[in-house]
Image (cartoon, rainbow, N blue to C red; front, side, top):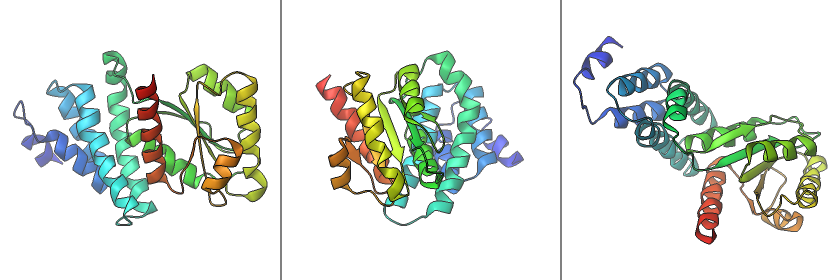
Length: 229
């Protein structure tokens, strides 16, 4: 690790973002945290460190995951490294008032305790530059709605792994309508028993079969919203 510090002592080293990204790809938590600290010490902007380093690295991981070049264990390790960098960076992002791509509320629906897939989607969305509020598993509609209101979320993600619990998604969507929130928030759904047809049937804005495609879906919905806004 000493060698890493020595190699970045020179002010203005332009490769530090690339090496942060590579550290994320490799899942090297200590390296990512150290390089993030060094980039800040060199007066690099928090926004550049986020986008050119952490997000850039996680984007590569997302593409590899989509192409089945890496699998869930590797994604989790990379996401952990990215999160370590985010911990170092977050106070500086707040201070600099850096804007995230958008605000996302996510959770596994009431009655369902399965959250591995949802956790991966959460990490991938954070890695793609979104501010994510993870409500965990077994989430009732009241908590979904309260969080959407409190955080002024633009996207709501719901997950289910059981055929008996996926029907609860429609209850949440219906409740959003009753509270006049449906026009303000896009809804995406995912989980093993779901299909695109089912997503359309319950009135969701999109369906993603895996975490990488969930990020693509979110990006598409946000871009569409900005274009129409």
